Length: 434
Image 1 (tube, rainbow, N blue to C red):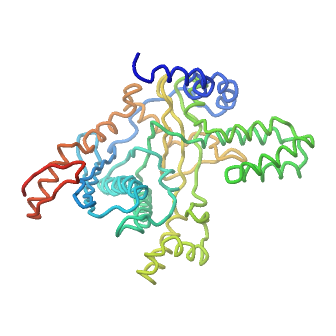
Image 2 (tube, rainbow, N blue to C red; image 1 turned 90 degrees about the vertical axis):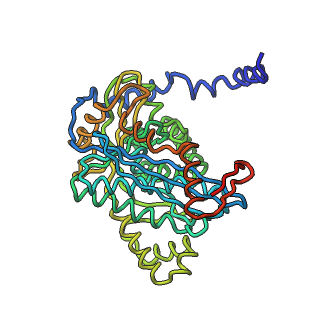
Image 3 (cartoon, rainbow, N blue to C red; image 1 turned 60 degrees about the vertical axis):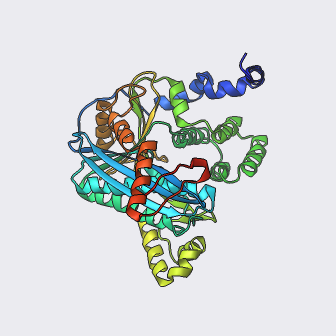
């Protein structure tokens, strides 16, 4: 028997229920969410080519670790069109990383940043539809904070500036930007469904109690223990216990994709959620983006102390511009698409010119906007099974991914251009002459 297999089986038996909750078919989820999902499910997909010039965008990065603790970070991005045309970007950063966590965050943010730049190139080149790998809304809500990365402490300011410019230019040009996420851990749809059920349960409750419960719902994410304690008191006073069950369910990390898979509704997609940016975290407190004034400016000076001290009035002007850009982010329409029965749901975020009426008291659209239907239909034409959820994005990923061979080539090119011996760190020690 392979080493540790006996211990694995022991753990599996001991944690059977916990494991089944994650990997099982989710029959309990089907009973809990099936009825709620049916209300917002659009059955079937009309596959059609709704756009002409379509680009898929992806990025990759790797580093050359240099003796002495430095790194040469190479980040690349690519916009690939359906006819094989390419838009390319590459950025080289050389520095000594201080914080491992911040360096990893910087690499991830920098890859997205270069995607935004090359997507902007595609829009300016006449793209009608630009596909990004990942959530558009998720890129709006990154925590604004200073990074412990030499010379790049205020990088998130640059990130927001370019992302805002991409979305603004796309809207002006009539282009549609869509984010496609295969492995989404988002719970935004689940929370909306639970909220609609909560409102239904409170329909006949005393208005005072209803207001108390809704206030507790708003505080659940930040102060779960206090919210549940207060709710238990209300249940003892006569509140429907089903309300407490909804709160408990909201605390569980079960993602939207899991409840959709468990419901087994077949090919189709959800009514889109209209997500707008109202506040963003700074690591200190939340920053309200609409109508932000001097108080918000002071907060940004505390969040980015190095840039504020270094640039003075120039930083204040840049921070004011940042606040305007955050407040002008367009709404994102988010839907989950199942392209074929039994397949994993794919999250699709869409930013386009146009809007949609929402259901009363909800962020769910009352009907599917034309621009969302067109995007879903076009994505269906690019679908090739569970492993090929979007062939253009997968090809862009293949072309832009850094390989050991490409990094070794960059290493040799750097030595030749600089006429300098660049010695790898001990963990990657190789020997080359410039």
